[in-house]
Image (cartoon, rainbow, N blue to C red; front, side):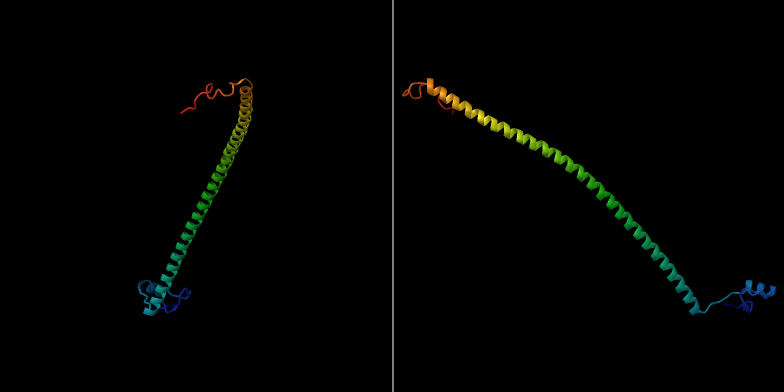
Length: 142
């Protein structure tokens, strides 16, 4: 750059005290094109910085959301594993009860057949005389 006020290069050590005093009181004017170019560069730089700032905020928000989703997923997976373990325990208990009830039912069936055969034999040996009909039997319930 060339300093218009001191008629020399800026920062030149040969500047006089009078030139420096004149530089403080004079105004520097930029051409319209140069002024527009400086403003456009400033605005572009400012917009770029704002855009990058916004992108960083969006990425940070996204990363935070992803981390939160992952934390929730892990928590739900742990709850699901606990539920599955409880479910397996309940199912095994129910299976044991069903097996026990089935075995008891089979035992009762065998016992009932045995008792029915025994009663039938007993009635057949000392039962009512043939031809007595239904005299010794109870009527069926209504």
